[in-house]
Image (cartoon, rainbow, N blue to C red; front, side, top):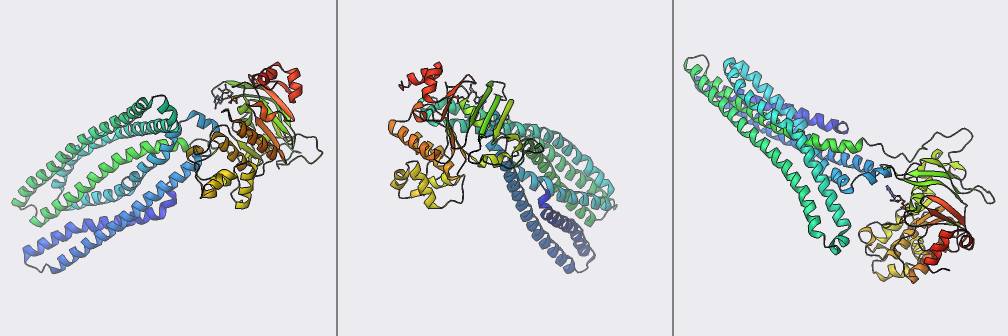
Length: 573
Ligand code: ATP
């Protein structure tokens, strides 16, 4: 993470060394001025040099601070970019396992903690160490005995501080995990706020978030306790060092072993040693906090992203990795499921030997009871999960031999839940085809019967749709999503019909939309309302993950008891 910023970091390090040298020169200059006063020599050159060094140290210090803060912000920025890139490219199964709020807190709160780690942790420690070590050397040159007394008292404080800081990392990680859990709880509550309000569960949800916040608080209090232990240990050590140096120094001046000017220099060096020591200890604690957060960032970065630009399997000689469409008259189906078995990573076996084919330009409907595995079939066609068995073919080629992104570019996908994103109608339409002009957007809206809705607003295409499209009705959301998919001109449209009941008008509009959509492409529609798919070229009946029948509506009424039952329940026979 530091590598891209190495020039700025080297710059800051050089500035830090120069300002350390300037800081170290000050006591010597003061000693010289005191010596000059004592011996009656002129003090002006000494004072002049001191002023120059003071001003230079201050200016360099400011420059170093700026460089460091900037670099720290830069590192936070790169980390956020890398992390977001990884977060959005994880295999879909990862999102099933993880909590959205927790993932979000890694981009927000964890990366923020890295900033302090960089500024205090990396360079300030370096600069402080230089000043500290320089001070120690200078002190040794002035008087070894005074130095020994200093080191003895200071090491007590340092040992206590280091022991305490070591525990901070674990606590920081714990605190950040609780922040993650808290964000997840907030996200859960906000995403279902209507249900929660209607269920009278607001108080309980607030309490859940509160409990998470309390755990963060507990970890924070433990860190505070450790820090409280560090401060008195530090100040006792420092005050002890000053008293010891003053006592022993006074004695040695009195006995004539050292000059007053040397004692003054020594005490100033002691200041120089103590200040960076405090900084190093603080930085060490912050470094531990940052490392706790970094571990959470790296946990995500360590996950293997989905590679959608290369085929999953090496292609066999004689086959093609180029995505093609069957030419007119070619009997090869556009899409073919051949004995597809599938179980979700949690172990539930959902599909058993599912086989059917979708020919170019035809309409296929998937029907069956709730939980039969219909939406799962669409997820597999999109390549969201690897198959457990069987083969999925696109125009005769195993899809594992094709780059997934290229395949997805040929597919339109309208998911059942939340098919609309927060933003405007235009944002939503441009999602899959970013370069399309306004006239095509209006034409797409007309195809799905949404022109009137959009024209009603003075903002036209820029009318907001709300978070998850809440400002639209269920049917409007679905039709807007279909318009979006069609703009990308897919060869196959996968449509997961909403389970929510659509009114007769919306159902009519959806049927009309499907007819428009089917004009020059194939359709694979998961249908809950048989009325929308009665005229499909084929209907696949799924039950408990098995294909129990395939045929047209009239055929299935004859051959499939389950289909007849579904049709009867929907008053279609
Ligand atoms: P519905 O008509 O109610 O939408 P469906 O036929 O589309 O149902 P699927 O959504 O495909 O059914 O689900 C089939 C089975 O897989 C269900 O039993 C469900 O519990 C399970 N399932 C669905 N998604 C997941 C997932 N992400 N992880 C684990 N199991 C899942």
